[in-house]
Length: 415
Image (cartoon, rainbow, N blue to C red; front, side, top):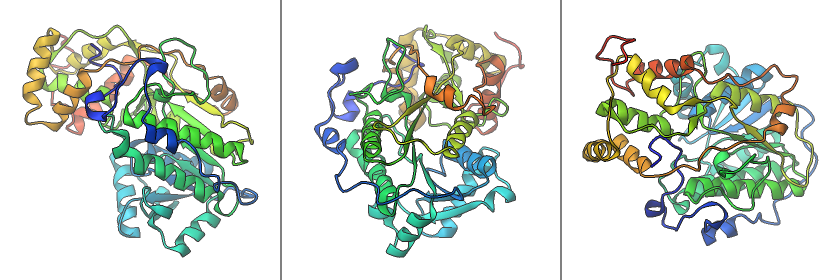
């Protein structure tokens, strides 16, 4: 039972049968969605320079780091498409995200242009004038926006995650050929035997609605590339906070289970799979660096795996949790599930942890990241190694923000 592993499938919540590897059925609706409308094709040449980058998902965890890296690494204006009723509200949402991760500054906000819209609406819900302005202003697009929820079906995620991707491609082709950088996930191609190649698979790695939606997005991207649109697919592995601050998001399945362990004060046996995390500032820097170098036209969209080739045992995370002063005793799986089930009655976070704890992950994956390493060879950008210090920074951040309980023991006492 993969208590601390990546979610693999949610048949009872997703509404369709799951299986292993290529035997996993794909919803019929997704197969149809994976075919790009023939009308979506470049309408001319691409931009001559790089002054403005359109970013979706700017108010999310990775999005905040992308805003920072695009603005300061490239010196561009970042046009942030954010769901909001007006420009002021959109700008406020971006500021909140930047402050949450310690990235906000007046200098950064001067480079941020808020664009209130809806990723799931036709033409993003923009007026004709605003849509045309966006099509002629954006010199590149980083499509990072998506609804991230492994417990929802493909149908529930389809509008923002799939139709939103189609809308991005329509915009890119509307007046010319705006290069598109699509932020996907290694889950799309995860498989137990490796190395996993940097290419779009014929089938998704699992049948969860979120992963199927990302796979559909990759299929759409590679068809757009075949029609002449410059496209690059970025596949980060499990993203964490920077090595220096640990300022991470709290939606990830791993930290959700760690929260449950900390609040219950007990942990089941740690799984044998090693843990690898990819810091968000590294992922954002790698993507921004690629944005400054427009992807060459390919018949198939190139893929970059943004992964960490170092790891630590999951049990080390539990040791570091105890070392912070949070008491965690060892428990059997039935004991842990009984306590978690009771807590889930009144705590939504515990309920999510209960769902996650009943799933098994894809197992350890070996990732071929030749394309990504080659692209970054002269950039000075590299992924920090996994370490106890990196875990400690994350635990400190999560305690400070209230996601994890305050220590009740003397720090450093393993107990």
